[in-house]
Image (tube, rainbow, N blue to C red; front, side):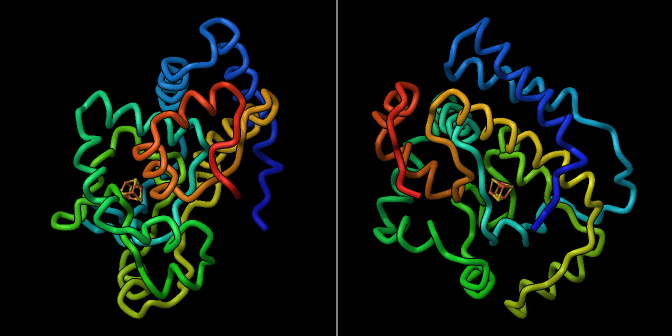
Length: 219
Ligand code: SF4
């Protein structure tokens, strides 16, 4: 179990920021976009000199990635504004088992199957939503890319060395969104990214339902 005790004051401060902005601007997608950019511009500066990740490695984009519902909504909004919804719609429709194959699977299934993220450009191994990727993705990094490669090719659970505080500082933003939404009586959880955004793409009416306080996904 990861401990976020050290980051508790940071998470609480973020929750207050989220509450304050929602009070001023309302609970809507525009507020979430502002908050996302705000958090990025206030990211704690930490040592990252030994990170070996590079564009096109993409190993961690074949593992279970989670996001809070506001982050999934931010991505959906990005796709809408960039006229990319149709592209993903086709991709999702072409895989009828898209949700069942990944939503609640455990880590062993992910490690064994190495299913790519919906947003991974498989040819170039690049993220197609890089600027709005969830904080979990921003948290992932490796101090030894050879281990990422080995774990990927051997389909084995592999401990990847990283800067733990750097990782948790990013995850803390997602936890802050999750916690605040719960306090506001909105459905709130860390959900598997691809299937959650796919659900929103296929059922856009769920977005208003969520803002109105309804359940949009069973967890
Ligand atoms: S959102 Fe982007 S960075 Fe995150 S797993 Fe998907 S492709 Fe990779």
